Image 1: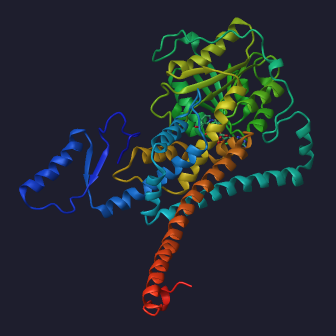
Image 2: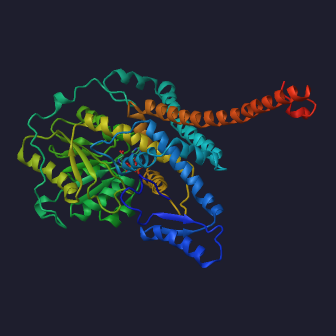
Image 3: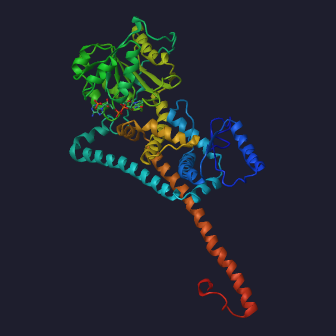
Length: 490
Ligand code: NAP
C-alpha cells in the first residue's frame, strides 16, 4: 500500500497486503511463495493477509478518494509558504504523494472500483452542500443589511470595514516609526519569573481562547477572561478569573487585552469595550486568522495611546494539542510606543510563544494575508468537504489516506463561523472556490471523457470488425443471411 513517493525513504511500517489465492501443496511451491513475501517482510513492511475481496472493500474506496483529492489539489498549483499550517502541509504532502502516479493508475481505480462513481457523486454533493451553506449565509447577511439595517450599508463608503471590504485608511501612516525588532533572548524554562508575568485579559473565551489560556496560565501569567457566554466553570478549571461584564474586566486594569473573538463578531465586540476603564497604556493583541481586517479595526477604533500587536498562531486545539514546538507564530508590531516599558511588555507577550518553541515569524499583516488566507481557505474547504463524506479509517490506510483523515480531524473541530470568516474576509475566497470547482469538473471530464472513449471504441470498434466480416461474407456468399438481425450493420 505504498509507492515511489510515499515510500521513497523506506518501506518500514507500510502495509503490504496479500492473499495466497492458489499455492500448490508441494513444499517447493510453498517455500517459493514464502520467499517472495520475505522480501517485503525484510524491508519492515506490515504484512497483512486478507482476501482480495476484503482488500477491495477497504482500500479501493479510500484510495480512489485520496487520488481524486490529490489530483484536484494538484490542479490548483498549491505552493509552500513560509507559514504553512499543519493542515496545509498535509495538503502539500498529499499532492506530492499522488502527483507522481500516472493517470492510468487513477483511471484504473475509477474503472475497477464498483463504488467509484458513487464517490464522485458524493464528493460533488458535499462540495455543493458546502457552497450552499456559504452562499445561503451570505444571502442572509446581505438581505439583513439591505432590508433590516438599510442605514448601515451607508457606512460601507464611510471608511468602516463591512464584510471584507477594505477601508481606504492607510494603516502604515499610523504605525509607530521606531519599532525595536523582537528577539527572544530568554532561556526556555518551565515557569516565568515574577518580573515577566503579565496580567492578560482574554476577550472571547470560546474554543481558541480557552486553548491559549491553558498555556498562559501554565506559564504563571495572571489570566482573566470575558465572553458573552458564561464560562465560569471552564475558567475555574484553567485557573482563570471569569467576568461576565466587560466593565468589571477592564476595571482590573489588565496590561494586555487579547482578543480571541470570531472574525465576524470582532468589530461589534471591539466597539462595545469600555476603553475608558482601561489604563492609558494597554496593549491590544488579536489572534484572528485574517490580519489586515483586525489591524485596520484596531487603528480605527482604539485610542491612540494603546499599543497594537496583531498575531496569528498558525495552529489550533487539534494541531497544537501535543505542544507548540516548531509551529509558526506570526506577528506584526503594528503600533508599539517607544517607551522602554511598552517595548518590554510587547516582548514579554511574544516570549510566551517563543518559550513554547513556536517558530516566531515577523511579517506585515498584508504579507500574512497574501500567504495564509489562500492556503487556509483551501485547507478548511477541503477539510469540510471531506468531513461531509464521513471517511472511516481502515486496517490498511495508505499514507495519503491518513493525510485526508488527519485533515478532517484538524479542521472539523473549528466552528463554521471561523470558516465563514475566512471566506468573507479573504478577497480571493470566491475565486478559490471557483478554481476548486473548475479543477473538480476538469477531473470529472477527464474520467468520463476517457470512459466515453473506451465505450465508443467498444461499440464502433467492434462494429468496424463486424463490418469487415460482413463484407467478407457478402463477397463469399453474396448474402447477409448467416448473421442474426441484431448484429446486422446498416
Ligand atoms: P470562533 O467561532 O471563530 O470564535 C468563537 C469566539 O467568538 C467565542 O469566544 C465566542 O464567544 C465569540 N463570539 C462569536 N460570536 C459572537 C458575538 N456575536 N458576540 C460576542 N462574541 C462572539 O472560534 P475559535 O476557534 O474560538 O476562534 C477564535 C478566534 O481565534 C477567531 O478569530 C479565529 O480566527 C482565531 N484562531 C482560531 C484558531 C483555531 O484553530 N481555532 C487558530 C488560530 C486563530 P462565546 O463563546 O462567548 O459565544
